Amino acid sequence: MKTAKDIMTKTVITVKKDTPISELSDLFISYNVNGLPVVDDDEKVIGIVTQSDLIEQNKNLHIPTVITLFDAVLFLDSEKKFESDIKKLTANKVEDIYSAGAVTVSVDTELGDIATIMAEKDVHTIPVLDDGKLAGVIGKLDLIRGMA
Image: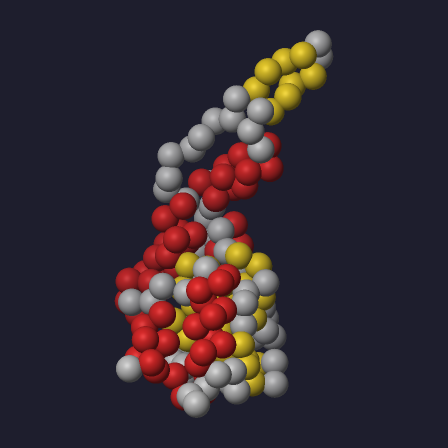
């Protein structure tokens, strides 16, 4: 059975939280990838940023409906989601749009388990770790190539 080390892309492009959004866009275009691991200064994977995160930054903003009752303002929609949308809309750096806590696999994770993770967790870019260090990345196309 094939494992992550058999199908992963070994040359991994990473970004840091302070990477500008304009540079992130250029990386997606230049390397034709769907997602990039976000690493800290010690190169430890702390999250993932995807093309979808970047696209969401440009969606139309939904203003939540509010009512006032006496002196209180009550949000009928999620106030936290609105705050998150504002943060993404005004993002200048990766830290404003990335998803913390990326789903990762080890180099020995079997292909079937990787497919299950992608399907059930709805993730399309998975960093591969070897003893806690980034060894590669698996995207949807890597998985499809491995199944062929």
